[in-house]
Length: 174
Image 1 (spheres, rainbow, N blue to C red):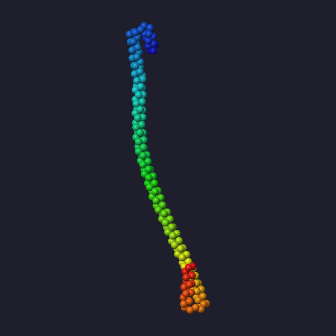
Image 2 (tube, rainbow, N blue to C red):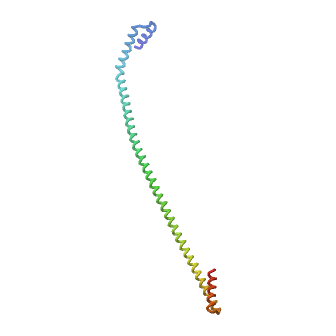
Image 3 (cartoon, rainbow, N blue to C red):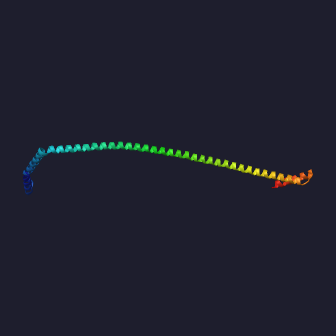
C-alpha cells in the first residue's frame, strides 16, 4: 500500500493535477482510517479514557489536598491565635507580678526606713538621757562642791545667798 501511495504521489508530480491520483489518495486514506479503526481505535479510545480518568483523579486529589490545606491552615491560624492569647496573658501576669514585687520592695524599704528611724530616735533618746544623767551628775558634784565651800567658809545668811547666786550664775554660763 505504501508503494501505491508513493507511486501515486510520484506520478502526480510529473503530470500536474490528476483525478486518478486524487482517487487513489482518498482510497489510501480511507484504508488507513479503516485499519486504524479496526486495529487501534479501541486502544486509542481506551488510552484516552484512561488519560481522562487520570486527569479527573488528579483534579479530585488536588481539590481534596486544597481542602485539607485550607483546613490545616484554619487549624494553624486558630493555634496561632490561641498562642498569641496565651502570650498576651503571660505578659499581663508578668506585669502584675512585677507590680506586686515592686510594691513589696517599696513596702519593705519603707519598713526598713521606719525601723532605722525608730532606732535613730531611740539612740537619740538614749544619748539625751546619758547627757542629762551626766549633767545631773555634774550638778550634783557642783552642789557638793558649793556645799563644801560654804561649809569651809564661815558666812552669814546674806553672804551665803550671794555666794550661791554667784555659783549658780557660773554653772549657768557653762
